Image (cartoon, rainbow over all chains, first blue to last red; front, side, top):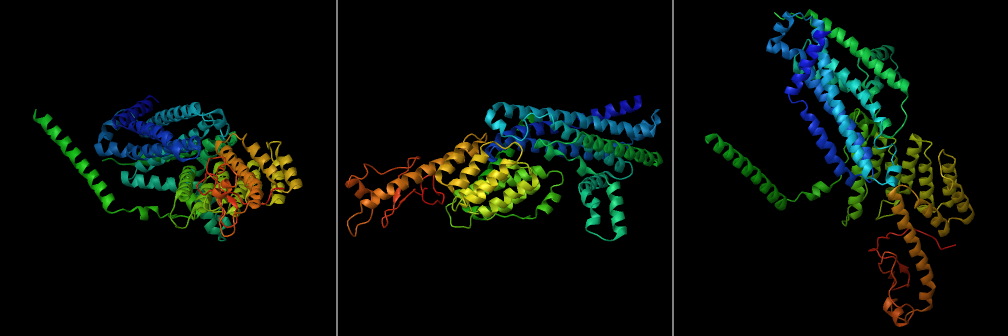
Length: 268
Length: 298
């Protein structure tokens, strides 16, 4: 456990050295600039659009961090040959993989946390400057705690993306791992179509294949509750728990497979 | 010292290159205007189903973008003075917006007002306005505002008071609907949609929390005032015709002492008089123009 936390902290420190937190400044500028501009363009829908924009930006920035750092977690150590000195220490390969994963999740957690605070700060300012009559016309309060439900599921989604990137990183090149992870992210959003394949096709084998792909590919579309949350529509607690539970189970499976693949790799 | 000079020279070159780029940009824009090409409105993807897939999990953000495009399209065409076909993309843009975000209430409600507004203030398509609002009802069947807005389109644009009353009663049945909907429906059924009923509805809308609705109501109330004044002036003008062969004019009416000065609408813009018939109209320069179609007062 100590080895895992040691590796995780080092991954986090490395991401800070790699200037990953710069994206936070970009996020802050995006939020502040858009809050000034959007009010002029949207006929009173600035708070809704700031929420949409903020949540989408958390996904995009998190996705870039998860993919572009995740794909280098293992391959970078192999390229630099630092893997030899690491594995010669009393660190098992499973600890190495899990530690790397935990480190990137920590980086993501800090980033998502800071972006959430920035989003709430902008929404708080907008709420403060609006008249009570204008606030009464909003679907949901400006500073709405329910946004955290969407952000929590976004975070679990990013954790899955990180696990996918790490998995590909254990056996392929960074470029291929990035392409595969991004491809899987897109396919994961079409999962509903695969689930409903039986409504448009009669062939039983085709339906079975579609169902198999539906269960194999991460179901990213299920993590998207942004629209409901922004409009103040209720999301069942059971749905949140089931989706988050699905995410953690999927991550566990991916990490186990990553450890198995990495354990078989020969670094000679 | 050498390093400092080198750095200064580098910065100077970069600034000079950037200034050259900006200068060339300005010169090019002046010499080769591409405004016409830029003004042509395009909508590459018209299928909401396709767009929903392309948007991945960013469908709400894509809806915001299409909403801003719809606003710009409507505003741009409304202000435009050229003869090109106007508001061509308004419904497709609103359809895409509401397909990407089915809970985008303002897009349905504001969009319906844009669509139903008579030409040149809008495309004059109350049928599409009703279709958009019915789409909103399909997404949120409990939202009384959509039923209310359909009723209003039927009343204000289509002058179909019977259907309007039916929709007002449907609105009243939805959860959270205000109590004044039922009296409005009853009043319409009884009075056949006169200006008094219109005033009653508009007065209620003045209490709406949404500023744009209040603004619309204020404008419509001023239009009703103008219509009342036109109706009061009509018999007075008819009783004082100009000499044969001379057109109706304000100068003549002032000379005759019928009016002391040219009457103005509530926005301060003088009314216009038809030289042939003496009919009074709101000036196209007035913010109240175009006026709603309306029958004689009851």
